[in-house]
Structures are given as structure tokens and as C-alpha cells.
Length: 214
Image 1 (tube, rainbow, N blue to C red):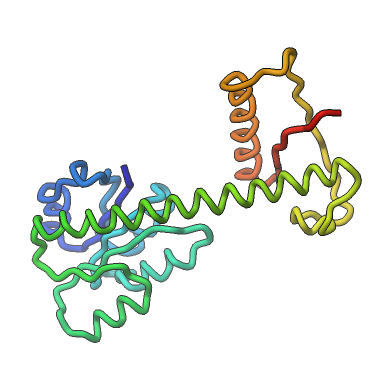
Image 2: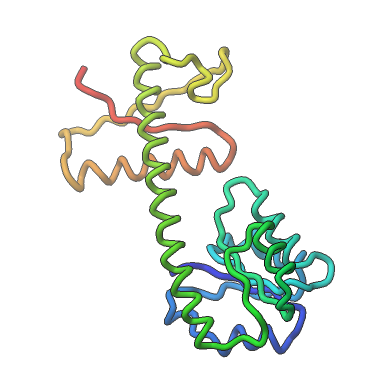
């Protein structure tokens, strides 16, 4: 399931997005609705949606500025749909320039929206796969650098891990009593990775590695 939020300053449109679209059937979860761009931006920060559907004309922060603000956020990867009552090509060009993935004209037609959601579902799946592959490659590279550090020095210097040359380091070793294999080995490894992720989220650089023989 992919998380989605919608933004529109027209109450009837917001109600339509909630009741006329089969989000669950299309593989999505509607996680929130906002009545202006600023509220939508706050909602984006708390929900972390995969898809943002927004009206182009809204008070405080319009749809185009909302999308641009989202695109400028570090690590943001959401796809976006602009909904507009204006068919002029200039609006479409502007939406695409700001990074919108689709431009939909009002009034919304549920059948057309379902087709659109299906197209975006495929794109979101590809995005997720690409991010997972990139993260796996990054993790493997960092683990290799950690092992080099433990064996006498980083190949690219401390900067290879984003560290200052005088950064203090703490190494924690977890020793299994009977050299587990398979699922028994994967469980503590997964727990350590989750711990490292929490430390990074709190601002402390952390990496995990598997020690070799000796």
C-alpha cells in the first residue's frame, strides 16, 4: 500500500476525493486531507506520503509552490498530481516545470482517476525498488569501509564515512555462542541494523558489519 494525501480548498472536492475514489482497491491508503498548501506541507512532514494530490489554486501556499517545497526537502521521493480547473497549456507547462507527474482537469472522473492511480502505482513500485537497490549498495560500501577501518585504515580516509579525522569511534561486538546460520543468524543482524537506523535518525553516525574469521 502506498500512502497518499490530498489538498484542496474546496470542501466538496475534498469530500469527493474521500468518497468517490477507491483508494484501497488501487493499492493506496488515504492518510490525510488539507484545505491549503501550508497545511498540506505540514501533513506531508508528519505522514511521509508516496503520492501528493493537490489543487493548483489554494490560499497561503498554492499547489505548484507546495510541490516545489516538497521536491526541495532532503530525501523526499513523493510523486505528485496537480488538479486544476484550467486547461490552458501554460498551466500544464508550469506544473511540469515544478516537478508534477500528472495534470488532471476538474471535475474529477472516478474511472479516469483509477486509471491514473494504476499508472502511478507502477512508477511508485519502480521508485521503491530503485531506492532499495541504492540503499543496499550504499550499505555494502559502508560496511566494506568499516572493515578496512578495523583492519588498519580507511581506503578513502575518514571522509569515506563522513567522519572528521579526529572523530572518536565506539565499536560494539556481538558474539553468537554457537555460530548461528540461516534465520537464527539473520535475526540479530536485522536487530542491529534497526538500532543503527535509530541512531542515525537521532543524529549519531552508525554502521553495522559482519566480522570475518579471526
